[in-house]
Length: 392
Ligand SMILES: *Cc1c(COP(=O)(O)O)cnc(C)c1O
Image (cartoon, rainbow, N blue to C red; front, side, top):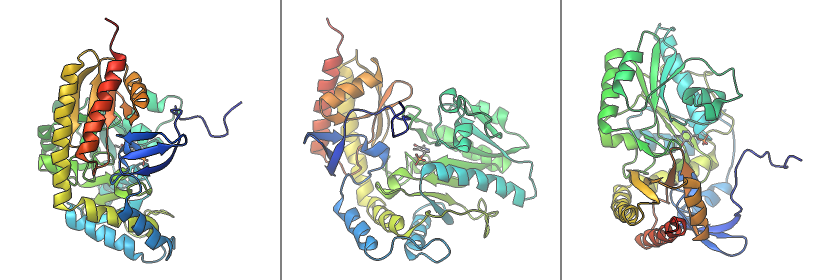
């Protein structure tokens, strides 16, 4: 008999009832160190007092009014995002997938508006993940995501990751945009080299092509800069944000330049819940904290410590780990054993990690994790790796 909850998830037999900072407590009172943070969502950890206060303060006043009216919290968050990024304008969604949908619509409408309606094609990359809607799986294109869901949405071409010659060869008269994650998350913590991102930007500038960055996982401070593309010294035309921006409250956004968004006038797009007062009150507090230079600074400092310790772990367990990847607190351990075995051994050691493609285990802790908790994490991962050592 089919479970009452549609069985689309391969769930661990763990059930959490409360959290505090980087720690979760399950229904049997056991504590787990959370290096997954809801897949990079709980940017400020669990039950952050500042976010609880923001949520409760707004909950007592007003939850929802619809976008028929002005929403001051939404306006304030948009202003703050514009002030801190390349963007001139922002649309709020409830998820990363919805942000992808708008990014695709915006790019196509841009060229329609510009009198070049044939420019509809979007170049994407193998190993990408942009969500689970038909447009999002069509964009990523992998068999794993698309099998059995045809007909897919036309207009997407997948290219080898970080291969500039492939991009050059694929760019044509009908190309509207290039869509890429600066660091692939689900794909296995694969960073696009800075030089590749700069070359992409240059190619887009030469041809007028729009550059769309999916920073749903790598954005919002995850790499130690507010957005990951800042490391390459480039800016996109359109950017998708979600996950960390709500700190656990469902919130996403599309940020764009005035030119990229030129086709999106009144009536061109909408969302019932997108940008509601509750979500934006929380998002505003997340932004206030994360965008603070001192906060971003401490991410890089702790990330350096974490990475150094992880390199040590790899050296100690060459039969379990191959390498450390990623940037900031978006780290991956490429495994020599099955990544799911390491995640499982982590459960036994009370440390939570997240598997990704390419046999990688992801480490995406809260951005305010303490050094002490990082040291605890290393000890737990060390013990987990020892459990997996082939018998000698
Ligand atoms: C998680 C993710 C998405 C989809 O976001 P949802 O909120 O699950 O819809 C899109 N792109 C990237 C890079 C992601 O990591």
